[in-house]
Length: 311
Image (cartoon, rainbow, N blue to C red):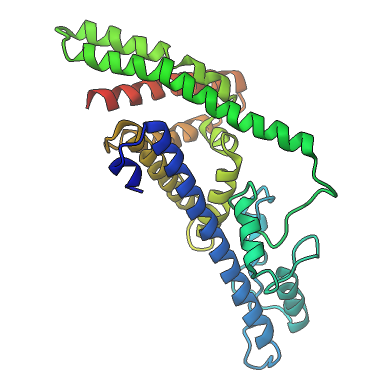
């Protein structure tokens, strides 16, 4: 992870390298943990050949990326005893893909792993839905969209964000009054408005679900979903947000070459805001919540960037 800094890469290259490294780490985590779960499931299935000594606890269903609630992925209550026939069927079904064309351990091949690495997902599955043939128009369109977005992000950042922040940093070194400082920071707030076109959420939980769906699936499955059997829902949510905040702080460190924790604190402050928005006095007022979200998004990001510039 320190290679980009040692070679003095540009911040865009550093972020690109860091994000792809994190993506590969998350992919390998998902691959290892899911296959580990399947290995344990297979062991329990084989142990049922001797029912007198085998565990009779219900089969654990690994969290999926398609379920809408963590309770849907946990199967029967922990510790509940089931009959051997039902348990054998549940364990066997866990070893088969939903489409029925792949099973464990036949999936443990180099080709399967390489195929998974190239799939646009962070969560490993035994099998993914496939089209009958390659739609080359879609491939070309998505490829152009990817490189087009990278180009626009780079141009926007280099031409409109960095110059403003660098200029603000230089001017802040020579300010003589509080009013001048406020005016300079206010300019930074205004220059952050173009990010608003990327998000249309009414609260931070909705934003965390929709801004990056593959990452959301990974955290819900391997962090939140894996924590739920051992922790309460609030604690699992806090841990999920904390790990996500640490990853975002790492990206900010690549951009600013500073580790200050402002991004981590800002992201963790989203949870109290969500609690307020979920109260009976505020919940359901979509327009009001949307306005509050925009205010916190614009002022929060601008303030965070300004803090990285100042300190």
